[in-house]
Amino acid sequence: MDRKLFEAATSGDVRFVQEASEALHREVTVDGNSVLHIAAKLGHAELAEALCLKQPYLMKMSNSKGDTPLHCAAAAGHVAIVEFFVVHGDFLFENPVFSEVYGVPWMTNDAGNTALHEATRNGHRAVVELLMSAAPDLADVENATGVSALYMAAERGSVEIAKELLKYPTASDEGPRGQTALHAAVLRSYDITEMILGKKPNSVRDQDATKSTPLHFAAANGDIRMVQLLLQCDAKAAYIRDEDGLSTIHVAANAGHLKIIEQVLEYCPDSMELKNNTGRNFFHVAVEKKNLEVVKYVLRSPWLTELVDAQDDDGNTPLHLAVISRNKKMVKVLLSCASVNASVMNNSGHTPVDLASSKVRIGIGLRMYNIMIDLMSHGSRFSPQRIDHIRSKLERKQDEEINRYRALANNLAIIAVLIATVTFAAAFTLPGGYKNNPGPDAGTAILSGTAAFKAFLISDTLAMASSISVAIILIYSGSLDHDVRLRSLMTAMKLLWVAAGGMSVAFATGIYVAVAPACEWLAVLVGVVACSLPFVAFAVTYWPSADYLSGVTVGLIPLLDKIGDCGTCSTFPGQLGRRQMSSGKRWNHKSVHLPMSHLKAARHGRPDDMSFETPTSSVLKD
Image (tube, rainbow, N blue to C red; front, side, top):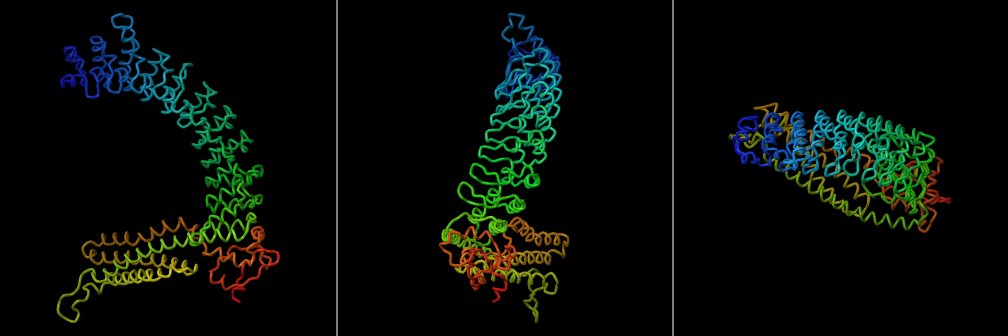
């Protein structure tokens, strides 16, 4: 576009534009905007009117996005220009000479948007009212993605625009992916939702491409007021399921929204029986998604106790799902319910304790081991199976663990060697340097008398000694003996933390010695950062895995050996569930947290009733 014409259009210079030639008027910008597009965007009403009267064809020109000047004016909210375009378009239709430009308000851009879409999307209520009064059927037009103006208003939360559009019965409420305006409204505005339900009450049951209703959306969002409003309109909508078979109560359980669940059960008590495509009720979903608050609510509600042992299509109870997800806390909560049956077998013939034992990693990780112990202490039994088959499975797991230990030992050894190398080198490149003056103290450290230097030497020595110890200890990690292997790794890991801490302190004190005389605050800051890093790293790595690493490691294969010579005894798993100590006390899982050397030294006869008796401390002493 000509520079002078562009400047005149942006400044609203009517005289210059009118005097320009028709050829100049046809020039466009890089984005295809004509001089009328520019005038419409910037709100130069007088210039726009003059251009339309002189060159009416400019009204139907489109830029690179397909926008006409009317789109630009509507998007910018310039009511006067929009009104002129609408009126002028009708006038041109009455004039046969200009009949080709009929339908200016109905023109769409490349996205399929009319001027009404643009005005709605940008929140210009006055423009919407003007367009609707001129062409009411515009509200029924959907753009290229199937989005109506009403949906745009609901998605934007524009209450006044939605109110204006809902005055027209033919107004479309369609949105993308099969959604309606109500789907968007429940996430944006209570007022708009209320208005839509007043005009279109049946839309509460409308389903999108995933068969989700507005009630699904509200439940997932956790909006209790919105859910209540929808249920008051049509409580039966709570029974509608999406493509995964999830009803409203399933969605609420999945998100952990307990108040939504309570609200749904108040309106539809029997929705507790609804199942998804895998045969799971909302309690299954809550357990699987680890929503403890919902689980505790079910357990303390007597009328919901039938859900505790409900089985899905695979025969899994909520307790099975808790074990599968390795959630120790959830298992404990479920086992706290007196009515739970901890020995239910699923369709594969596995009880919860079977699943726990199949996931036990023989070695450092004890989360599944502790879950198994909790299950057994609450009466969960193994499914009937031969003990030699159990032993074979555990032996294969032990072989897998050996490979994991070797990889872990290699990683620890590499880190230990690196720390030893760094700390050894630091001992001979002391901060502050050495004395070069002749005399008895020649070659000694210049700053040897300072407290920070002494701390540097001590921490550096500690780090080097610890890292070398780790390297030596790891030599024994390849031993086939279970206890030696685990004990070596655990000790090495602890010493490695000591080495890392010592190296950090050595770095901090070394920096302090060198920098403090010139800038003490900087030396202190560096020291604090350096010394805090090991603690931060320890917290990040330890606390998330505290539950996983809790307890003392014990081997399961030797534990089975201590039960007695019952290699072909098919009754062992069931009898193991009796858990009776010889003293008559309830079986305590802590009694099996024993070093393997103790278990090997102990000799216990198998009781006649095949019950599992854990060795007591008195027996071990003998």
